[in-house]
Image (cartoon, rainbow, N blue to C red):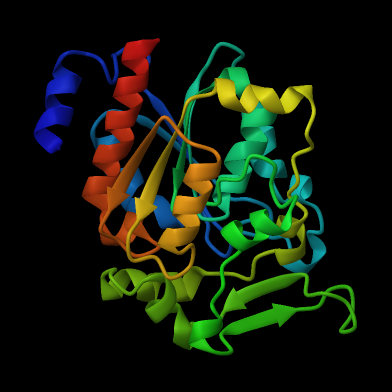
Length: 278
């Protein structure tokens, strides 16, 4: 894989001194831009441009997750980022886990600015959570692990939870079981409650605009040992909305920790393949 990437770089298909490929990396619920630190290091050391954006209430964003009640509000930092990009710039947009919903939202709003959309162990639903089937495929079912969630009730205890996070004692066995211990320790220090209610409002209406989603090339990175977005859920989403290509990683839910070199290789290989078609 790495030899193949080196060859493509030498042939100039991945980057040029004038305009290196720009990767925009989007975290999942509870995470932040920090979760991509290994991938960002590999990319920047190889000459690529990389941006990581903290969604509202994530990473270093100071917002309280219980105050974030809509999907557009949650994604405002990412939407603002894309609004600020030059009109003629195209990026490779990568989303992990629930960040796949953010990728779909941005693709709808800024299709001309996305060269390739990549879903990594991610929720890839063309219409968001618009049906029971969407919820079955896209919402994690962690019931086999027992009572593992901590919830926040920003609208009152008699209302649905507005935020949630997996309890610290359960995080490693569910999210990072194949990742280095130091990475799961780092994550336990940095994970924050995510705006559950806002994410569940992610619905992309069926109208003429939604057809632009099929015009933007997509690829999926499947994680074989995923306890969060289980392999069968990933398979179902891929079958329902087939991407151009599916890569498979022998990984837990967090391949940026457990398989960083292979994930890096998949991302730049996919970007190179798409660039060669442009």
